Image (tube, rainbow, N blue to C red; front, side, top):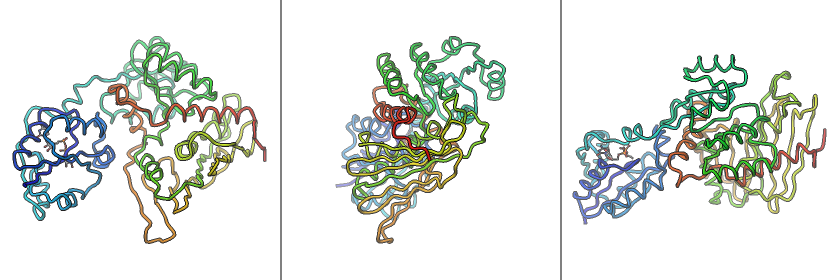
Length: 446
Ligand code: C2G
């Protein structure tokens, strides 16, 4: 039996892909199709795929041409697959001519004619564009705009800030066409909004946006009351809108992989999670202003809460906070969570600096993520026997905001496959923890 293998992303599956698979199948008796994983595509610079790996596998499957589908996860896998599956012919489109000649050592390499006039890139450009309005034009919004520019199918069309002069300057700087004089004006120009205003204003803006039928991407921290989070999620569900919290770490390739690896048991049972996020901040900053919901917990807690809730769940027995205060806000807080079979802790600080790494300890080994762990491209899994230690590297492009933006846009464009990387349950739990801290429950001042 002559075995043929071919690989591809097969995004927005089209006639060119179909022709290629058909031609490949005709070369032998058994066709194996390798479909790239989302992470592998990110790694090789394909940032803008519209369909996730499950959708792309489904598309290949539905042609009925593939006798076997495998997933392609890393560079170098082709050689291993060819040997593992006893492949006779490696086939690929002519756009790759010459590139895969190194595989000739293992099997025949055939470059098949590419279908002219159609491509995923072209189809992606033809997809609807999500028009985005920005509420709040401060520093995070300034970092957001260049990141959104590298994501397909999204255009920033307008911005709003109650300070019209500041808003005009922002729009001028980034070439945003419309300076909105009111929220109504902003909403009339867009289908989705990015809420990047001071955190105490999130609840109000998100609610107005949802009521106006807009999808929402809201900066962290989302809201400070569980009931508010609950209300906003219900509203989004009711209206059939995507509402996502822009907790960038959750969308970064390294973090997603780390969580999946640890959940699959590579360090045994997880017994402790410890993470810290400190960012020394000018005392006069709004972030340290008690009247504006300033403070370390409010500003940074959602970052370490993410791995804790993802790895240990939302059902802890109790939590205690140890805080150092200044001018009515916590400049440093250590939180300790007791779970039935594990413990977790984090440190957050705006007025105290500490090592910003993350260590997750298990019964067989531990994961070490160096500072700043919340925007990492690298982590290690370490064991008693150091020979077994492994290092893992992932892409982390630019400011890392492009991953959440891409997810948000994909969520809006292909709703049926959308699931939020930070679940409703996790978001509610984060709000509930913040609320408990603000109530002073189990807070010990040092
Ligand atoms: N293709 C084609 N005609 C087109 C478009 C694509 O024949 N108009 C072929 C490509 O040459 C490739 C296959 O369809 O053989 C899949 O294309 P992509 O989805 O773009 O995947 P690609 O990035 O080429 O991945 O490991 C992955 C491989 O290296 C190829």
